[in-house]
Length: 167
Image 1 (cartoon, rainbow, N blue to C red):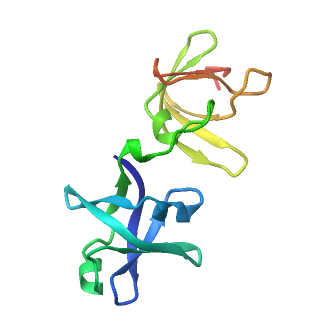
Image 2: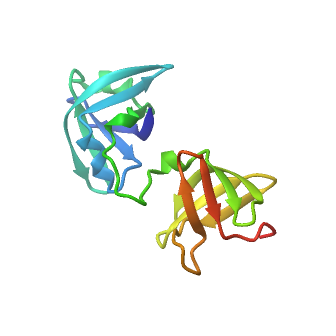
């Protein structure tokens, strides 16, 4: 499962929910027509009947959730999809979830740790690497000078970086 967001509140009285979406743009979450919603410790499947951007957020109507009280039981529930529902990406592009957990090694073979997560600064994405200490490495990829990430190998579970281990 890949978590794409969370049900964050209620919208109206007919079962619509507010959604905090991790997708970019945020309304893309409603394009996935089948959601896996974590209710307690269990995943339940819901079909998205309707959904749209609403101000700075997203709202959605799920099939079978027709009133506010039932919708309230889903507040703070994670929204996920199955990994195989993501569209394939062009060569050289990666889903963040595919990078998390990869080993990060310098060009000289020094192990820096594993990618714990990524975040976006607006200018570029940043790898958060946990090893002997936490390192923040820009996810700028290219062979040329000035790019931190030189190679990503999903099969090997490896990201090779041009990075000073002391930094």
